[in-house]
Image (tube, rainbow, N blue to C red; front, side):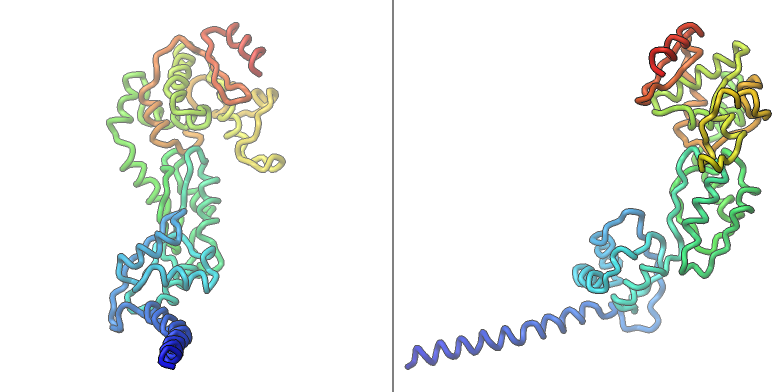
Length: 334
């Protein structure tokens, strides 16, 4: 009889535990979602989410900055709200007196700044389109960026390719200033001055670097191609860089690109100072924004006996010292 009572007591305890534990856990879960601070005067702090950052890291950073009580509870909340795919990258203004739900909601639409990546080798029109795409999203009621104005203000070749946090209300002038300032910070005057050893001005270095950005497939090729192009200039040969003709053509609506394939007829038909089939020397300005790798290669060209190069269908480069060797490479690799 005593054994039966013990089992009944044990069963009762287990039953009560099973009934009450979910309630207790749910209440504890809700406590973890409450604001870290109850003060109405909690200061606003900047919270940055970088491109590609996983939710686990985002939640951990929120907890480290004392903006939420518990990272795991925050992740459960995001899953419950089904908004994990809606969380933006950028800079957010948050406060410790915001609940976890308020913070989660803010991360889906409340970015102050937006991450914008400007790859190497884009002309200013392509940069403008990319910036507009990133800033002109539905919830951005502060949008001010003017694509046409950016194209007018931007100096080709000097809008440094990088990843930027750009304010949602950025103007074209503001973005131009940001990218040109970054160029000045990243590209030293001493690097640009090295071109004088090869008869190139700082402006020439940027022009040559823009050609390398469009012509080279790898970093290893860049100083070699730079040396080849200088060899051709010094020998009085036209550079014959297809990308310069493509730049002169402008946007090709049929191919839906700014960098369309150039035909042999266009070598003669495109009447532009940028056409390096018709005009000797470097074009009058850059044809794209080069990265630091290309600028460094332009300032430090390799000394070789090559005057020609081509890439085969697999992207491998082949050099030649004479026109005859180049023609053999064309027959062999193209």
